[in-house]
Length: 262
Length: 199
Image (cartoon, rainbow over all chains, first blue to last red; front, side, top):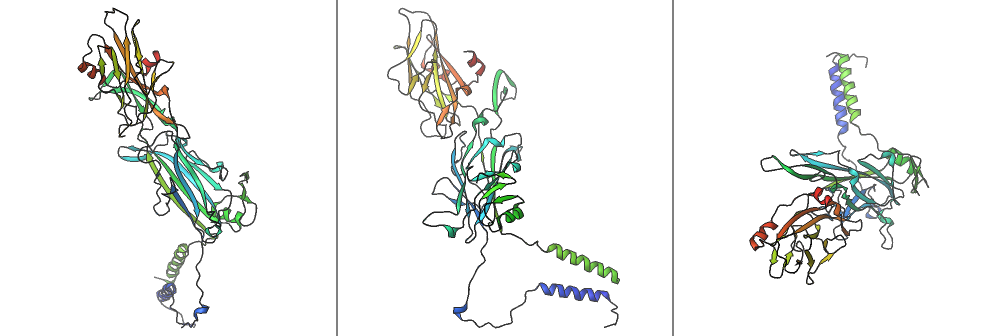
């Protein structure tokens, strides 16, 4: 073994072969004899969450696959100031685990500028009003921006196995309606009216509505984390310090030192 | 390639391999995203009075208003007469109500132009009253105003007349032929907010 290896490339090549070979899954050589009675089937449960959108009980649909909110209650024409029955529910899809959830909401306006859709930050996102139940969802204002809010469900969300007596416990309503504030109809620029040749018509003005042809966007991002070892799990997953009423499955009483009302 | 170079290459491969290993997840998590949008259309309401009806014998003028805009609107009408002349709503008029401000308000909102029904008011008939043996020419100006429908939180509609737009037509005692009256109704919508404020 003291013989000096003269070609280091040979060593490198052998090393690479060993590395690549180790990545190939080994075939099972052993023959397994097993009685059916001894066979155990299992699957690993996991934390899973989903969003469901609806305007009534007949059109409730998951949006996780498409990633698109359809706003079924609104239809083609947005009636300014009317509160639409636009419902969004958060559902614990885990078969076993309870979980904590939070939802990031982003609202903004987009306009078509010369054929290109561009976010228009001069338009007010707060005029896109979402009805969110503050008794269940805590808005952490430390994380809020004019465009984004973060809501925490202050209680643990049970799994489907916790549903009893026909009560659906693994779902919680997040959005209970959507309204475009009628202030959008009052933001007006008055300009000289133009004739067909583009020349100003003397003494005639016209209103240009700032929000006309603007599109309001609503983005929802729901995050779920396990409820075991709650405070550490929430901090590890979301980076948010919380205080909970129990090590596992408790209510969240404080978020970043602020009382949640629980 | 000497031995040192080979070591260097092998080290680089080890680093790349380590970088490719995903960090272990300490906690069970999941995440779902969704986005939706709708486009808002806002413009001034548009009104078109339909063909005018004037019964010169009985001195009755009838108007009705059609919403030709993209939004549901509320409408109101006012008749302005010279001194000594008056215009009063006839008893057979339905759906209109005279308020203290002198306007006749239509009791329902008018649907937008895309609606199949409900975008035209019922007839509002004015009896134009003149003193006995009145022989002078006079004009009666009919002003029709509209404002977009707003909605309360509970979904009930309401009118905000500070946002009104107006059009008007003039009824002359001298040339009230059907054709001319009809053409008068087709006058373009005008934004006369300043004039309205002065009234």
